[in-house]
Image (cartoon, rainbow, N blue to C red; front, side, top):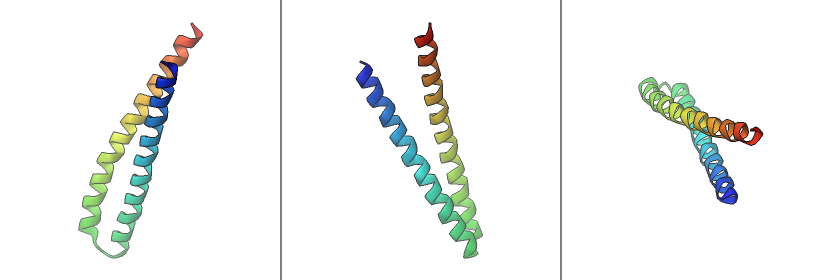
Length: 76
């Protein structure tokens, strides 16, 4: 069970890393749109990025809470 848990943690970490990479690419794309004067598209893109960022933040919080919960139980 421990190896399954570790594998799940690694999978979760990998998904979060991929999501962060996608967000970074999206920010770069939005910056390019602004540089080209396409403000309306940049605004729509930024709103989408914000929604995705909130989702990634939630995933990070969840992973942190799970990790803290395991550490607390390990010390008991």
